[in-house]
Amino acid sequence: MDPGNWATAIAGSSAFGYTLLSVVLLANLMAVVLQALSARLGIAAGRDLAQVCRDYYPRPIALLLWVLAELAICATDLAEVLGVAIALNLLFGIPLLPGVIITVLDVFLILFFQSRGFRYIEALVISLIAVIGGCFVVEIALSNPDWAAVAAGFFPTTAIVSNPQMLYVAMGILGATVMPHNLYLHSSIVQTRSFELNDLGRRQAIRYATVDSTVALTFALLINASILIVAAAAFHKSGYSSITEIQDAHAMLGPLLGTAAASVVFAVALLASGLNSTLTGTLAGQIVMEGFLRIRLPAWARRLLTRMVAIVPAIVVIGLYGERGTTQLLILSQVVLSLQLPFAIFPLIRFTSDRTIMGALAAPRWLTITAWLMGLAIIALNIKLVGDVVFS
Image 1: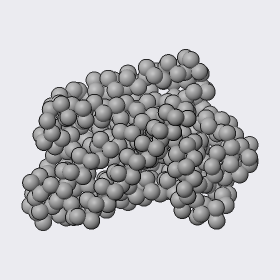
Image 2: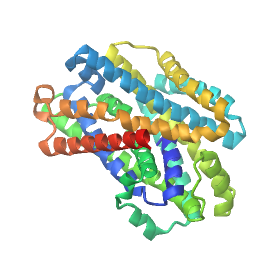
Image 3: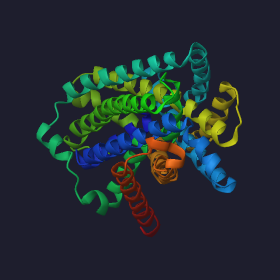
Image 4: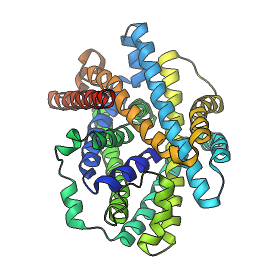
């Protein structure tokens, strides 16, 4: 639930109403399956996805996958930088450029919680998610959406693929939901759980981890759908079909919903969203670098390195276009994630179906086939998207 979800949901719902709710649902179902495979790999093989790629692929392929994973993490970090900077601007009036620089300070927040143990990081993430969820309960109550139209929006239409503008936003939603770096992250953090190191203990751990991630992703679905529902009810319904900037959405929410509290709650949830994704992005960066390269950097050094890479394009866009270009850059960063997805998905499917790696805990055939179909569908949609961009 990072700021990329906000950018894609606001742009898509203001233009197309509730239509893209079906994409939110399908993307979430894909995430459920892929996160389950990721947990299975970490528990059964005792290694994360990055480590398995390093061990079983030729070094040039492993290095290519590392570079692509790092690009995905930088794209995610870019969304976090812009999201937090925008939230600081909306809440406290801090200009975007200084706000971007301030985001570097979250290194110290992460170091503080890492020093106290992984359970403290989990507690912080849960708290931030609770803040986001509470904010959107308030926003939905204020926006009074058309629930019949909401229900209809969960059924996909061919227009999503045939309309290039809709497909672009849809792939951004997909990238923002099924994030490549989360597959590396989940395969590592499930190993922090205590379980018996035999097939029975691992099976039980896989079952619990699958339930755990499915429940978490169900909450993510509710919140991501809520962002889209609120924006559709507030903007599309009122005829504001060209709201593409988060700042514009913030400014319009209060007048349209009849209370200034709507705008404040919106900004608070955005800030919580940016801080939440900052934690997971940092952890994923450490896991990817250590897994692929066996390089262990101090947490502060790894965080600063990734953040500096994200800050540069953010500063360039703000310098050239001001506030007007930030949300479009956010959406582009999520589309980049969708293009990166197959390079994490197919290694994950390959390894979780391999009995020499997984033993008796290899993924069942139906699960492997389902994951393959999802991966192929993502490739087909990415090809269509690139074709639309190149030949438009």
